[in-house]
Image (cartoon, rainbow, N blue to C red):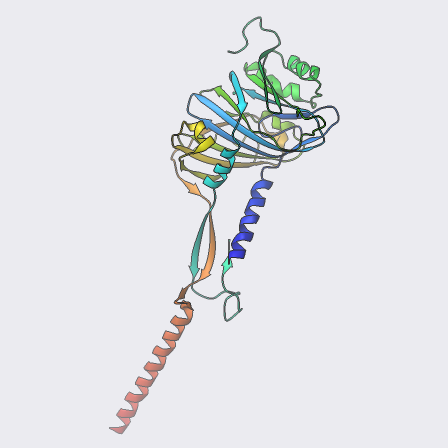
Length: 356
């Protein structure tokens, strides 16, 4: 039974990791652009979002694969953003907080793998805006955070934004300028990150340090529009920490979002810095985008009608026993004994009647 549970856990882990796979040039929250003809792919993306009604914080961690020594990543945000390194520990805590619950349920009658059909028992089931007269692209700030060269930008012209990035050595994928225009029209700002390892000869591969982006917003927005440039299916995984259970206002061109966890939690460690150490309602959301070109906007998340908790339950089915003996066998045995006793009593009465 322990071996079966371990195998089931491994299968679940593989499924969760597979659901976070994203291709090069796009991830769930922006565009990833390699330098020149190099290649880079986002193999895993995990995002933690904290929203208190006034401020939004997004912590992102990427696992990348490829041969690019440098790359650029851009994310539109609705307000002036601050950027710092995030805490790796919060992702491990979230995995623990949203773990499935394991329960055992019993069944009465024997199944294929139970005696007498088999000798084996048990079965597992299982984002200040640029003002008038502002330059086409303004650099609000620039910081070096680990292997990240972070530029916080404003732009009044999508073409100028594209030129700024290309002047810094990065060829953008076709169509990016058009996809940036809606953000420019709304006077959004941008976080542009140059992923450039300081170690000579080092390639961008493996797990990158988490980045934490913070901005004022009266709506919970998760930028997704740039992911429509992807050429292969996309998957999105979000952890939302808010006052209530949250849900996307629409599917924005993807499959129906799935809630994989919902419940009040008391964060600790790095995760507690997002909530100020206070309890929060955690909602974990997974969504698939089989045809990224159909993505028609950004995710806006809203509170659900009720804060209904949810945790995935994995059941292990076991044959019902009493003192180690199958209950069905005891029941059948008791019925046979009762029938035998009844037959004996009936014969005895008939015998006495005949004697009389």
